[in-house]
Image 1 (spheres, rainbow, N blue to C red):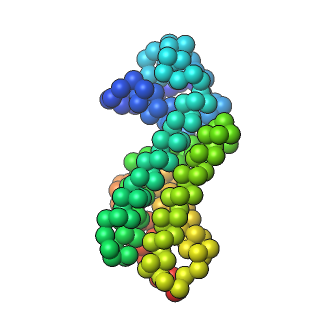
Image 2: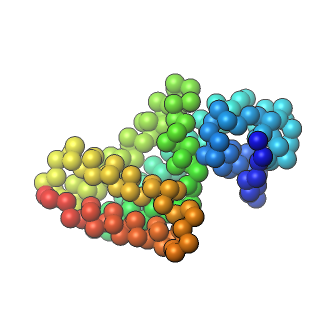
Image 3: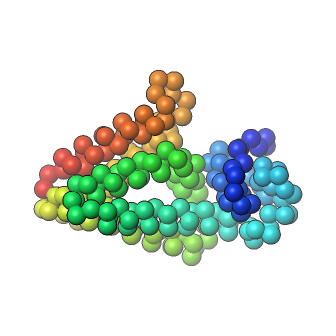
Length: 197
């Protein structure tokens, strides 16, 4: 397999995580060997074991780490204003920015979550559910009569729209990725603000 990801600046551990996300997104978790990953970051495959005990541990750190990042960002935005609409807008913009900056992680999350060890998968799911509940709370503050389950459905619908960036932005000649994210952000906000109470 030809490895051609961009090796980022930063510590070796972060380089491995970033390049692994690129390779896993392109070839799938099972399509990337330790030797492939080592070659992509400029070390021997066995040298990677100094940083991670194996591919599963690397995948776990990647997906737990991004889930923790999203939750912390969501919590910060929920505290950022007393205006429920401003909070909802901040959440949508935060998710859109993540989708634009980390499209490989969205692909890996969607496709390879099942490859995590059981405990790591449970941890990711718990973090994700907690993040969703921040959106549910924000939506119900904007729409006080909205049932909890309807708010969850709306939140997941918004994630689906915003997380489509990896699929809708690459290869577009007409609009660069930031313009695509801006369109998706506007669409998500219009939909979420127009929900019936």
